[in-house]
Length: 88
Image (cartoon, rainbow, N blue to C red; front, side, top):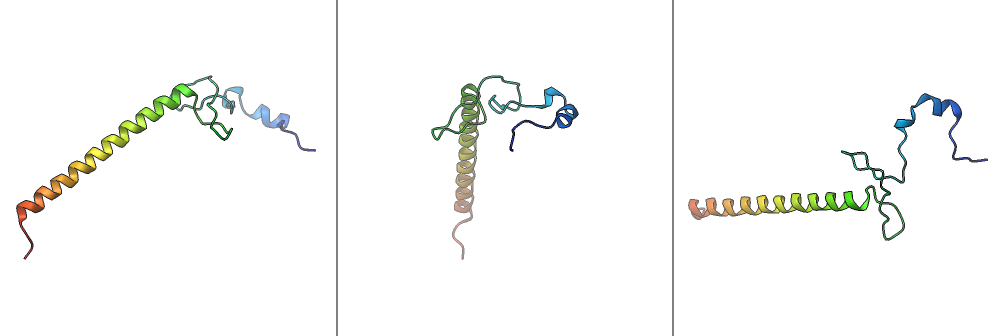
């Protein structure tokens, strides 16, 4: 018969602090006891709503910086090639 309980010897080998509740937010830099947000399909996100908002905001900021760097690089390459003139 299948049971979700772990054998007693396994549980004694690890302190209780090492077990993470799968239903709690898994934000890496802080211990957050808030429940994980639920996806549209019913599965759980890794973070709670607050930490999802923070992570999404940070990701958008990083993406914006990458796009700007790429755009500046392309503009500088165009400028350099315009200074060099046509290839002969």
